[in-house]
Length: 204
Image (tube, rainbow, N blue to C red):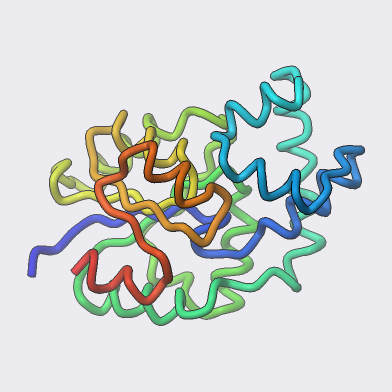
């Protein structure tokens, strides 16, 4: 079995943070109906922002504010069922694991420590830019001396697939997070998983 560098997104991939995101959006005046919330899953984050007609400066302001909201809500944010076992299995199989996320590093560390998998990750990078994950992905590959064919980015959004492609690495999209299966398929990931238990076999 080839040893790989496997980089994970956090929100919607490892942690089930979407309910907290919806709560926060409503607290800021974006009162989505259940139908509207489901419809948003068919759009990339860039398209969601355009659809809601939010300026970029406000997006950055809200992203920063969300980190504080999330910190208070984090005790009730679960990790997806089965993801802890998958991460431990991948680590024990000899793969190098990392995280690139738009959430704050402290929020991510708190949840990983709570569920006992913080030590499974070689590095955690927090990237505030909503569309700029390709650069930190390339930096981590250089840091970990990974070849593009041996590196994967695992994420739940169209922008994660695009970032992996921009970094020259492979993408594994997961359907249990923000973007819908149809939106993810349209972005042409290298692989697609429908439940956490599939990750071990797909990556091993």
